[in-house]
Image (cartoon, rainbow, N blue to C red):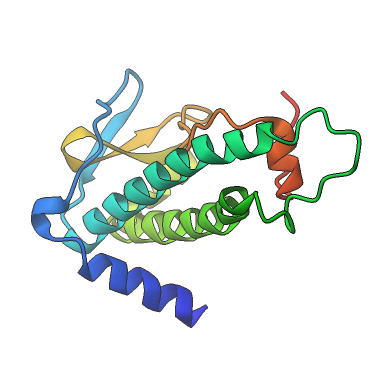
Length: 167
């Protein structure tokens, strides 16, 4: 746990104020702007999450090529021990790291809200999001967006132990 936090802190130190990239998505209909995120470290954490997500997307492209070399083989293939599947093996730890950074980000964003704002959001069954201009918005239930969208074959995800909910 401490090594994870130390690594995140080191990563944040490597992000200059000029490197900070905010959310590009504009507030949607039904979302209410609550306040503006002012904390520079939380802005850096958002940037780190974005950087790690981009790294995962790029890694997934290479990993899909690796996985495609094993499709259609009759023998059982173990991705976790295959020397030709290094990038696939890197995906699960990176995804876990993104999840941890994401949890830290949202815990931090919630601390930017006062008790009244938090109570109102929870009472109305809403969640929070970040939008263009570092606006913290209140989102109607079910209106949250995913943070990572990858076109990774289900069998590759399954080989990494990632469970996909049925739609």
